[in-house]
Image (cartoon, rainbow, N blue to C red):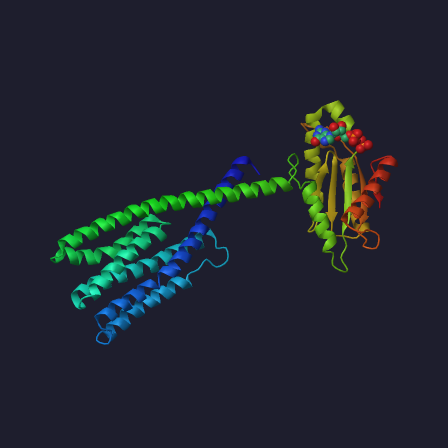
Length: 371
Ligand SMILES: Nc1nc2c(ncn2[C@@H]2O[C@H](COP(=O)(O)OP(=O)(O)OP(=O)(O)O)[C@@H](O)[C@H]2O)c(=O)[nH]1
């Protein structure tokens, strides 16, 4: 993959992760907050004498309750793609804005319709909701601003229009303070999620680096050890695991004649050949170190032997392009199948196949030997 493609992919992945985190947090925070609205409306009606206002209470509390339940139903199920995540966020904010606007309208209505102390109760709850919104729903500023205005403005209009100008002024200052708190909370939220994403990416990078060989890009010895132990320990009845250990013949000569850089390029080209040749499900090609490679194959020894021979024959017959010039290399291969009766563990299995490789070298190289 080209470097700029890789960077673009990482940027897109980062954007998606941030969006999914925003969706998760918005769902979580909106879920809890929704139920305070019907409870607050119930308390305001209780303060006014609930029996006298039972129909109005049923409509207001019922509406706010339905909206609270709707908030709970919109969740980040599974791992939605970017389009689906944006759609859910829009839907969720739509329901949140419906709750805050409904509350704002209700609190303004209490001044006209309900006796004291119901308007005071509703007014104080408006302040609490506005402040809660500025702290908790700070993931997106525009809808959060609309939500705060929805909760706060209707009662302010009533206060400014009536004879409570000082209360109205204090309420307006309070609302401006909420908007400032929202701005700060939003900045802190962004800094936190960006930092968390940076740490996640660093962790993934380190994890990948610890599993992949830096020169050839295929799995390294550490990953090989883990894959072999996994394969051996989880071997199901009727299944087989084979191992090839592949060593380049006279690699020192190649290094000495063409240079170390050409030696490196040769190892990269060889790893690419391995990747292409051993690409069936269950195949794990790795670089064990130096000019030694390994392949874990889910197959019987005879099948693995045939595939090893095909690889060896093709390599010897077809020169590789190394720094622009054709270079023919041969390999010696040890091949064996894991046998629980003979191999106590993965190490014993590896040792057995390594001995087969040794025999292949002793027998003249460019050949495959059975363990
Ligand atoms: N270019 C390059 N050379 C390496 C690397 N790792 C090991 N080598 C070289 O690989 C050579 C291995 O040499 P030997 O172990 O003698 O094996 P050989 O020359 O391949 O001989 P046989 O295995 O007996 O056929 C050494 O010269 C190492 O320096 C590497 O990452 N890059």
